[in-house]
Structure formats: structure tokens, C-alpha cells
Amino acid sequence: MNHREGNGAATYPSATLAFAVAIVGKLGNNQPMTDSAPSRDAYPHFLTIPTRWKDNDIYGHVNNVEYYSYFDTVINQYLITAGGLDIQAGETIGVCAESHCSFLAAIAFPDAVEAGLRVGHLGNSSVRYEIGLFNSAGEPLAEGWFVHVFVDRTDRRPAGVPDPIRTALESLEVQS
Image (cartoon, rainbow, N blue to C red; front, side):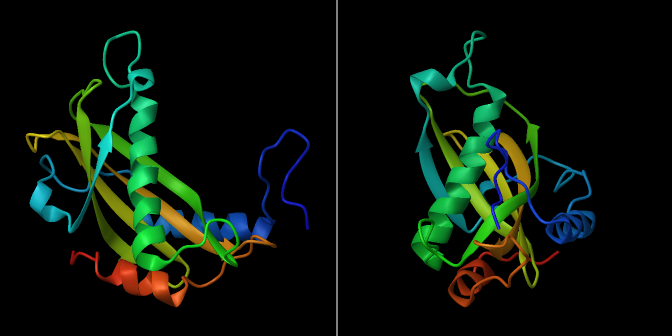
């Protein structure tokens, strides 16, 4: 089955979309993760991400869309290095079902972003990552979440979280 339309937009079987909507309903509540700014010690994994000159916008700070790129970077770096995700040929891939970002402070090039990662919920075929972005002084820049639904690469139908990835993600789980 081809999952691409002529305009390049990904399309998925209706069962996959219904499943993703159901997962989002369970995992995402459009509420902040905490009532206060996140703390660095709440995240078991960190990645330093350098900002780039092109990340700045006309207002002199990193544009908001780049924060989502930092989320994606810390997640996928962890999945590849700790979980063995094969982004080129693996049978199972993660597709984004939902993402959210609460902006707390600005950052600008050439500052680096410290991206913290934890797992708020790990299901059979989905995971809700929780991300905190901090400056080099440890001050919070943003917090958010990102829900992956794992699907078969070919037919885009829900698949279980692969065992090596599940093991890696379990080490990042936080208790609610």
C-alpha cells in the first residue's frame, strides 16, 4: 500500500488514525505537565543541542518552531543510541500522534539547549515522552510532550513497541 499522496503528504489507513486519536485521548490532556516550571532533576536523560544561526527569527531569538525540532532530536537520538531504532530499514517506526509545547523563556544563537527527556506513559504500541528544555544555567525554556504511536513501516498499522526500544524507554519512566 502506498502511504503517500501526490502532494507528498502522508496518509494512513483509517484504523491507524482512529487508533492514534484514541491514544491521544488517553495520553494527551492539553494540560501542563506540572503546575510550576520544570526542574532539570526531573529528567533522567539529557542531550546538549547547539542552536544555529538560522534558528533565530527576526525578533532576535530562536523561533518557536525550532523548539519542536529540539523535542524530535532528543527523542530520536535516544531511540537510535539506546533503543537501537533503525530509521532506514527497521520494520517498526514511530509516528507522531500529538505534540505540545509550553514556552517559558527565549533563547538565541549561539546558546546551547539542554534537552531533558523522560517517559510519562508507555503503552503497548505508544509512548508519551515529556521533554524539558533548559539553558546552560539550568533555567527552563520550555516543557512539552510528544506522543509516538509505533506502526509497521509498510502498512502503517499499529505495532507493538519493539522490545529493545521498550527496554530503553522503561529506564526513562517516571511515576505519576
